[in-house]
Image (cartoon, rainbow, N blue to C red; front, side, top):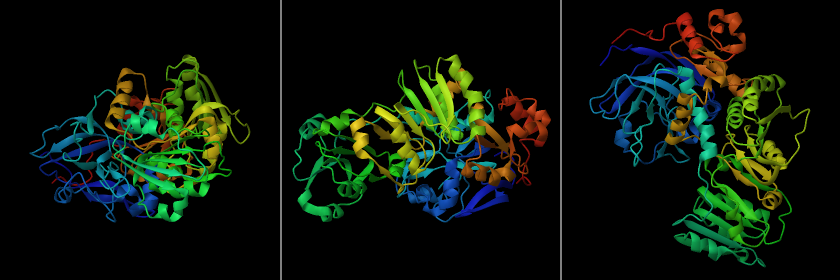
Length: 554
């Protein structure tokens, strides 16, 4: 075991809205199945602010309910469910500096990109994740257990080896870029779930058409049928989250609103109007579209099969798409804009929409040359002063505000795909005009997090030189500036990502635009105002050595 400091600097969330900079958190010694990662860089995410607000109310702060025995979880010092203080930070790069005697898949010295979304470990409301119910990267050292960080079934590692060439910031920011990638590449389901649970609800006077066709193509294990005459009481008698598919023949808004709670994770709700009209907006839980991956499809016609036929294979862009990104100048919108600009697809027309002129100027400075070089028509507009022309075939929503979902629907054209990328909390209702959505054949979808293949895909882009994640860096900070960084992210005053260097405990936040005044030697290493590896090296050399210990060695 190498010499390690006894204590370290760490950012801890200790309660709702309560953050401390712990300057003497013990550095844990890895157990037999554990590795100790020395953290190199961490990106700040809007999700960190949601955890700080909700704390125990966040679905990923709950106890792990399966996938690993309670006795094994008790052996992991970084497992911190419930009211136990946690260390946030899930956009992480680090190096393995120690490993237990029973570790077989990892070795000391490896530099790793960290995948943090443990979908094989369920909680009551979601799944486990690093930076939530397992301590994250906003500390100098973090323990990870090999029983957690090797994916069951595939054997894939959650610590993905990465070379020495990219900067720490570039690697850490692969995690949010992977979340963006996942929103385009995640497979959508255009059939009933084979072997799943199907609920069929029929209003009086509505013919049942197309159901046999769906069942024949992909047979569910069980089918439950309700008629309008059964009343709301029959719906209330069914358990929430019971069904993988709900096919509703009718146009009663109250019934639709009552039925949606019965849809399980990754469930599909198919509304078959049969020529009728709902007549008013329907209050739909858009948070579940994002976090639970539920989908709403349907048709103004009579056949249930037509709703599923509108489902695209993925949420990927297509040649000739007219793309609107709502909230484009924020950190995640920035990434969506850059991805669209460099996609290589033919005939794209990109409109980046925001309400902050200064952030739009910064976005245009970076994205416009990339788009122009690839033949993408790109424009950048403030929706407070200029209204975009509707008719978009792809609309991405970056800000978790229900009125912006309504705006996205108004912008959407026929068969548009509407990506609700923003992290709406589960339970967030938006009044959606389902009559209009179904008439257009529009498809609403959303994703949360990423998986190992998404991480590897963006890592490959970085290594090939197809993607420079550093273009999204807006500010850098040490541990002392994390509180300011979180406030900037929550207030949406940051025009890009904020990168934390845990080895710099006393450094506050510095925006790149202020770097020439604050640290001119570091500013000299920027390239066209963008963060670089040379700038990172200059920062670490100027402000403090990355190997500095926080406390006396053991």
